[in-house]
Amino acid sequence: MLKQGMYTLTEINIYPIKSLGGISLKSSVVEDRGLKFDRRWMLVENASHRPVSLGLKNQFITQRAYPQMALLQVSVKENGLSIKQKSKDISELFIPFNYDHKETRDVIIWDDIVQGSFYDNSIDEWFSEILNVNCRLVYMSDLTFRKVNPARVKNKIVSFADGYPFLIIGQSSLDDLNSKLNKPLPMDRFRPNLVFTGGIPFEEDNWNSFKIGEVIFRAIKPCARCVITTIDQETAARDEEPLLTLSKYRKTDNKVLFGMNLVCETNGQVIVRDKIELL
Image (cartoon, rainbow, N blue to C red; front, side, top):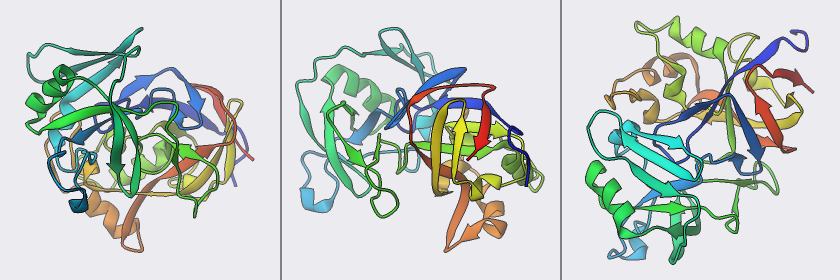
């Protein structure tokens, strides 16, 4: 067992609009739903003309079906979000934080149906044209409470993230994977919120409760990985790695596992270079 204080937080990342480009930060505020601004926005397919029985009305979209979403880079400004297309000369889109949402309705994310606050046509048209899919942007207000799977943990909420408010990965785990690949991959393939150095590969699999700085987190379950990990976040090109290699030594119950899903037990601030203490 490694001594306490051997782990250091080295990356903090947020993804304000689900499945769009992430943002690397030096510090962030830990909230119940996740890091501040993380996945509070989401794109949904504009399928209002389709029967709800088909399960397609206002359903979330991601890079799984639209890898070109990786090419939309989000920046957090003082008064809102700015989005630009990485590879084309297209005017940036600005989404103000202070916005009068006149339309609120149900949206679908996995097995959950929650309230989403919609934007006007000009914002939706920008995304629809660039992504070549009829879609709409929605925001999760502070009045929307999406519960984490109660079979795993009670009385916790989450943003539009897949299932849990936070994802942590050890740098040693990626180094171990890269030692088995012909071409090393960057950490952004796995879209973590928190990255740390120290410890052995996949040590986070066995963590329970721990502190980053003064904030207490609890590990819930390893993260099952999908095809988004095979998408180059700079070019949107697909490959068979890393899932091909990971499936040979990180597969359990037919799921490829990489990283650990977390909830927080306290709120506060985390800062790059914070020490991590196992409790």
